[in-house]
Image (cartoon, rainbow, N blue to C red; front, side, top):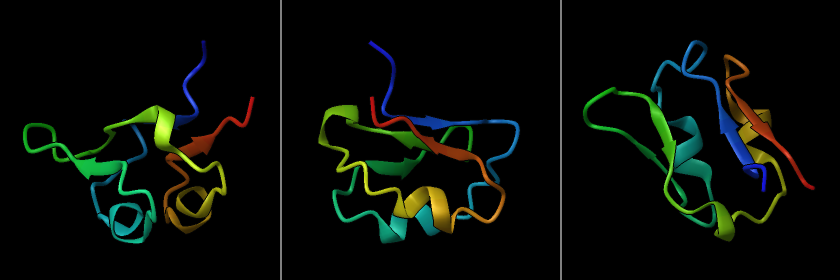
Length: 64
């Protein structure tokens, strides 16, 4: 099964905007890499706020 939320590590800057606005609190900044990571794919509501708010376009929501 394909991930609902994909984060491109080449585009992510670890700014934390997505983490702050995620209503399901499934995004976090990894302390080792400093980049965003998904903590629970199954809890994603698929509304895509994180995708729209990401200033670098690093997040992609896959609704299927």
